[in-house]
Image (cartoon, rainbow, N blue to C red; front, side, top):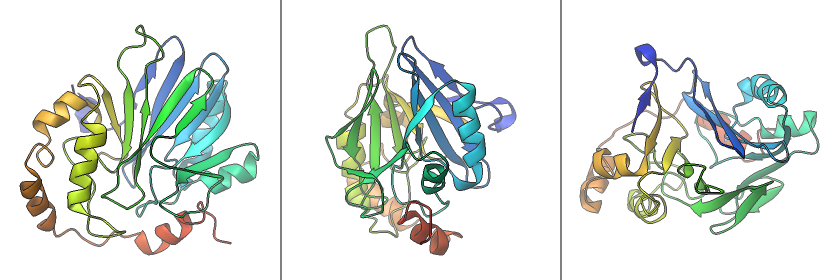
Length: 255
């Protein structure tokens, strides 16, 4: 299952709705970053995953438009291509709490580890450690609250992209570790689970575990083949890494 918008452009990112939850996908075209707004309809509270500083006002306007009270800002890892808006959002809305991996050692209100859960009304996000792109990468698995809610959803950051994955050549990256993380913590989810990545560069919105296990051109290979592929990418140095990483280590705000 792959969904692509007309003309290959991300013009109207997906809105998924069940009887208890809303998941709104938002997009930052400069960094090709997806931000996710997840709201619980029973208690009208919400959280944001991987918000981008330049899109802070758009994201908060969406929270307000949908009638939610924002409680948490989650980051999947310390980003190298954009600055999080978490710290700035806290300045504007002091009741919001920020969350990131304990392993990242970044500043945050709460630092979580593998196996923790984040509760939002009737919703529960399971924290899964998926290092390899960076040492502190997390994926968040939103379990269906009932059999009527359809498949679960996993928000994979840069660990697993649609028919791709994050690079492993900086920030304690490790291709063997990434392979193990994806296969043990993401590919172990049910095949119908929806995969919502941190980025996409080809106008795609969502995939499934079954699709990625079968068709991902990197991660459907053996571990040794995957390591070889990753070692030969020869990618350019990220343009914003020298400013984004230090800023994200302090929740997007330079003290």
